[in-house]
Structures are given as structure tokens and as C-alpha cells.
Amino acid sequence: MSCLILIGMMGAGKTTVGKELARRRKARFADCDHEIVARTGVSIPTIFEIEGEAGFRRRETQMIDELTRQPDLVIATGGGVVTTPANRALMRERGIVIYLNVPPQILYERTRHDRNRPLLQVDDPRQRITELYQQRDPLYREVADLVVDGGRGNPGTMVRLIETALQTFHKSPCKP
Image (cartoon, helix red, strand yellow):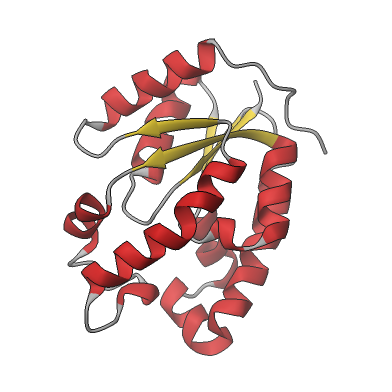
């Protein structure tokens, strides 16, 4: 199996859907952000505070490079992974990229109480989500092999939509 790479905005359900997708496909699962936290021993907000977004993005690119070299892996990425051209190239080249497209209003509902999202620690998080969505949606679509619209269905429904789309999609497997 090729590695499957889930992209989309924060709150789109990449980790939840990714875990279920991996379980059903009898594959391994990795969350890029969780891997970075495990390696550094500090939270994402702490990395942002110390190294800034640029420092975090460098770590993210290293992790994407490492994870996409592994076959039989479902990868959940961070919402901003597509802002780095190198990440887009690595993902496009090495895996099947699935964009979980969720409307901004639903993203806001899912993330409004989450203090672990540095980019939402602003006066108007709803407006920030809308701005990020408008900036990133074209990048998600540029790199995506498959776009799955979601937001109201449960993770099982999303996984079934992904599996159906994958049945008709063929791409070379992950390669080192």
C-alpha cells in the first residue's frame, strides 16, 4: 500500500479519521505534529514561542521527509503543512494525498476552545480560520490527489468516502 497523507485545516479531523483509516487498512498511523512533540519533548505552542513559525515549519519538513519514506503508513499532517513548497513536493511525490475539506464555520466550532493551536490565539479566531482557509484551500487542492468533503459526518463515514475514492485511484507507492 502507498502511504496515505491526510491534509486539511486544523479541526478537519485528520488525526481521528487517519487513525480509523489506518485501523481499517491494517496499516500503521503517524500524526506529524505528535511525532514532532515526541521528538522535541515540548508542545507545538512552545516550539512556536521559542523558534517561531519558521522554526516549526523546518521541523515539520524534516518529519514529512522521514514519514513519507515509509510504506503502509497513514499520515495526519498539521494544517499548515502545505504552506511550505518542499512539503507539497514531498507529499505529491511520495504518497497519495487526501484533502479533508471542511467548511470554516465547522472548523471554528471544533477548535474554538482549543488553546493548543498557536495560530488561533488571536482576538477573532473565527475570522482567522476563514482567512487561513482562503489562503490554504488552493494549496490543499494543488497537492491533493483526492478531495473528500466533510464536516458533518462521523469519522467512519469519512473513512468510507476515502476508501470509495481510493478504489478508483491508482498512483505509484511511496518511495525512498
